[in-house]
Amino acid sequence: MAAEINPLAGKIVDPSMLANVPRLVTAYFAGKPDPSVPSQRVSFGTSGHRGSALNHAFNEAHILAISQALCDHRQRAGIDGPMFVGIDTHALAEPALASALEVFAANGVEVMIDADDGYTPTPVISHAILGYNKGRERGLADGVVMSPSHNPPEDGGFKYNPPNGGPADTDVTSGIERAANGLLEVALRGVQRIPYDRARRAACVHRHDFIGPYVADLGNVLDMEAIRGSGVRIGIDPLGGAGVRYWQPIIARYGLNATIVSDAVDPTFRFMTLDWDGKIRMDCSSPYAMARLIGMRDRFDVAFANDTDADRHGIVTGSNGLMNPNHYLAASIAYLFANRPQWRVDSAVGKTIVSSAIIDRVAKKLGRGLVETPVGFKWFVDGLCDGSFGFAGEESAGASFLRRDGSVWTTDKDGIILGLLAAEITARTRSDPSQLFTKLTDELGMPYYERIDAPATPVQKNLLKALSAEKLDMAELAGEPVRAVSSAAPGNGQPFGGIKVTSDSGWFAARPSGTEDVYKIYAESFRSADHLRQIQDDAQRAIARAFAAGG
Image (cartoon, rainbow, N blue to C red; front, side, top):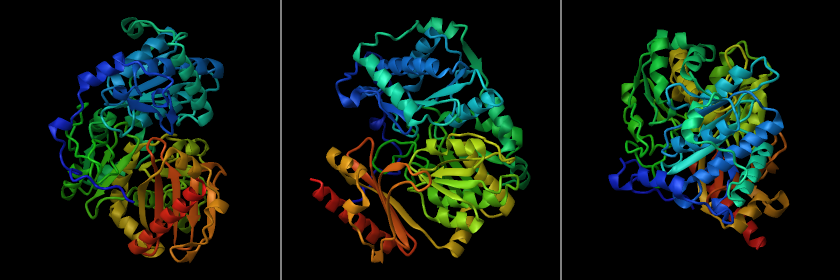
């Protein structure tokens, strides 16, 4: 049932496996998607539209259509402030930026791009939007990031963040998606566009310093003085991503004892080690993709990496190597709520429904509320804006938290501050996050957590989305009575597109993949690794019965 690990996982990429960047960029401009083919249409998932130019899923036509649809959305919504636009280091990011600028400038949108034609992390775009909009009621800003996150080098991505600074909600993205596909269907008639050189010179296109304001503001979200004063040894690997030019200014401004282990930028990502399936993927929570930094653990008290748009974090501690993302979320929550006295006493912990239940136990220990949401950071935006969430995180190594005074920092995931938080924890407690997590488990129990994939046809995936407690008909889970079966997140009552089953000492959740013919099983036991396997086996059998009953 579990995915088979490729024998090349964790090894340096063979040159024969590298992306042919000229061919990829040629395909971006020359390829013509067919909107009658579902895989070639615009499709906004939890993190925007993604795909490769090589299979007609991310071509210039897509970006022109999305950009015009976004301009039309802004006009309808009355959003007439600047649009902060960033790119990551994927090969398709700069071509996509060029195409989008041709449309934005033709529509008269005030666009803010990096002052030095550099790269801009997703959290920096969120920070810029919130900073500009603070105290304003009109002329609000929004933003776009050209990034497919940690996806392979052949992929491109287009993400939209509205004036609240976070990922756009479904009602916004579905409207943009429909409009963009409508434009594809009429061969882009209705797209306003001017040549690229005119767009770059247009009065509405401005160069903006993203690095300075973000770096200067870090002391308001983290205890940078404690990190500096402790001399904690820090290792930083940007994994060739958008954060690469941010770390040296951070180190210099705050006097950190930090080493950037690599500042290489290469759109083929030839410096990466291969992920579990033998693909190049800048996943900073994967032990295979993080093999280089894990190998350096003895050189540092704490080390960390970010994915390509720096919204995710991977934490390596000297005491225990790469941390499981759930374990780091739990340690971060325990530390922050004990060391942020200016946060509201009713600030809660936000977590996705498939994140570890150790977070529930930490929140209970702290006397803090817990809000479980469906997968997707958009569910945390309002709570971070008004301070009702002190911390919000996902099992996939994405999180953000409030400033030290309890006000909003970002409403999108920020892998930069989560990395620096590991240094603050080490500096102020003289224990690294792994050691802090061990103390938590000594008191609250040790979680055994794993996510695995199983095959599913499109029909089965639709059955899983609609699965109810009655249809699942499950009374026991790994020898224990089932206490709850849910298809909606308890924190907001929203369906999460799957099913979750809970017993006294374990749980599993199953939901279909949005991009592959598989379904994901998240499972956890507070008893043992063997008990976890029993939960996974019971989960697969129960889902298989439901598939068979549904035809």
